[in-house]
Amino acid sequence: MRKLILVLSVLFCVNSASAQSSDPTPPKAENVRAEFMNAKYWSKIGEQADPLRGFTLYSRNLLPNPDGQIELWIKVVPTNTEHFNKAYDLGANSAFVLQYATVDCSKKVVLLERTGVYDSNNLRLGNGPPALTPKSARDRVKPGSIGAEVFHSICIKL
Image 1 (cartoon, helix red, strand yellow):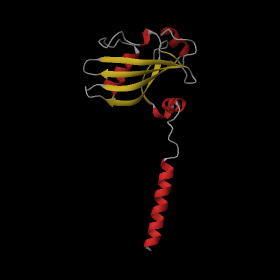
Image 2: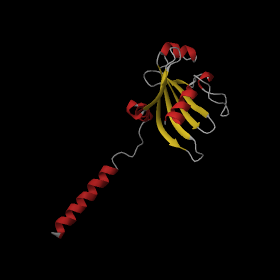
Image 3: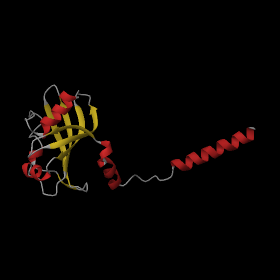
């Protein structure tokens, strides 16, 4: 009986070791990007119904930081792509915008940074124009802006 247990434990260890060391290379950037962009990892947090600048907001990785602020990724998907792209001075093939946001509910400040504009194939088109981001961290949220909807969704709805 002891020999049987010893043989089974050796086989288990060998199988576990071979399963863990199957491929030590890190995943390719394309695979990481595809997983990050996957819709099932994004949660709808708000929307703005303006017919020209209307959009839906999605969030991912919403976490509080040590300073009491909330950090998250924001995905801005236009309701009417043509009007949205014109209003924010984006290219015709722009499909959505990704931004990393830091929200300070007590100071009513939203800092949108690491902005990227993407097409419908999840290819990055660039950083986007200044109209997508406030001038500085000290700027208060402006009514009707992306930052205002982010603030409302995070600080008031949640």
